[in-house]
Length: 200
Ligand SMILES: C[S@@+](CC[C@H](N)C(=O)[O-])C[C@H]1O[C@@H](n2cnc3c(N)ncnc32)[C@H](O)[C@@H]1O
Image 1 (cartoon, helix red, strand yellow):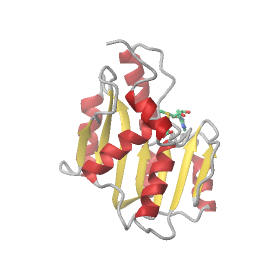
Image 2 (image 1 turned 90 degrees about the horizontal axis):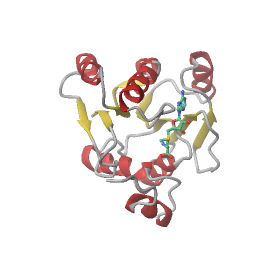
Image 3 (image 1 turned 135 degrees about the vertical axis):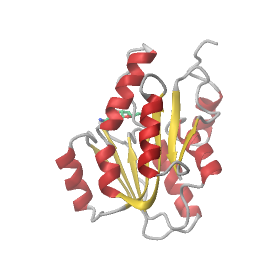
């Protein structure tokens, strides 16, 4: 099947005011795993630009009447949008000291939910792209280790390829076999190697 940039989810995103179709993947994941709930106060969004997941997350927190929430986003690009209690930083997530300084200036010691939709620059070769994706994730694990609450949840995009099974096995060892799930939402393009590793 040929890639159609103006497919169903692209049109749906336009109609529902989302900045990108990425929001629907998170919506499907949320509907299945209920990662965000009334106790979710602090959310970190890695690879947040242009901001569709922040839009979805904030509207959900507001619908749930969560008070005092904070959604902190990181991306290499700027987010051209402002929503209540949303703080988006044009900041490479792998720059540890700068990322730590941002957590400190927002008075964040622990996080309830981390979502990562980060994608490296792809070259079109699925194997190389998958290796780059895992390489980039490895560099962000420190954020999870340092800031995720012991009962915190995450949802991380990853491209399937060499080392995928080993990567997931390591997460299962670290967080418990029953806590880690692998899920590919319907709204991902069928031909894409993109999938999600989720901690419930
Ligand atoms: C698929 S887009 C994200 C879409 C976004 N989640 C949304 O809902 O609108 C992937 C993003 O990952 C970002 N990215 C890639 N490497 C990064 C890094 N080292 N640090 C932060 N963001 C990065 C890219 O700039 C790009 O905007």
